[in-house]
Image 1 (cartoon, rainbow, N blue to C red):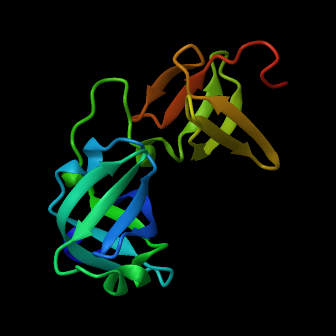
Image 2 (cartoon, rainbow, N blue to C red):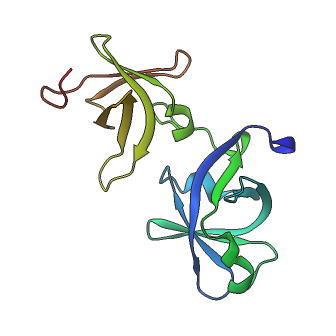
Image 3 (cartoon, rainbow, N blue to C red):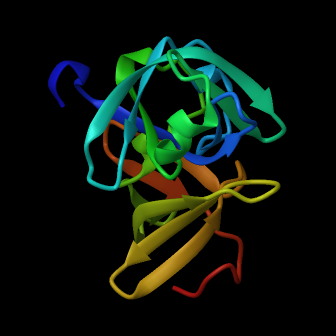
Length: 173
């Protein structure tokens, strides 16, 4: 990744906004604070190439974010950026309070029940209106686990493990 080191996927450019070159971005974490103070970011195209851009402004727009890049002031200059993934350097991210995690830290965790039964690997996170849902896969088997405190009992990033306490009937083991 060159001078950028470890990068973190934060969201995706989903559309242009207005005619003055703004981009509408969906944040995967839903946390505006993760992009609020950025002075630069990267956009990865379908060819997997990363391009670095300087940020002029970031503002909230409902559940989305409006991004203005320095040097871009017309819709014609930014339409080719729609569909690109938004990445930042790991060290650009603000520290999170205890009990909160960036998606990139959760993806890939081994998921066990509180009885140490292995469910699989956390492969995806689905954003819903109320709480996120963790997609855990083991071979052909897939578990959808609500990201709620009463279900997710422990996250240990050092050991790469998430422990869950599924209520009866959530899934058959």
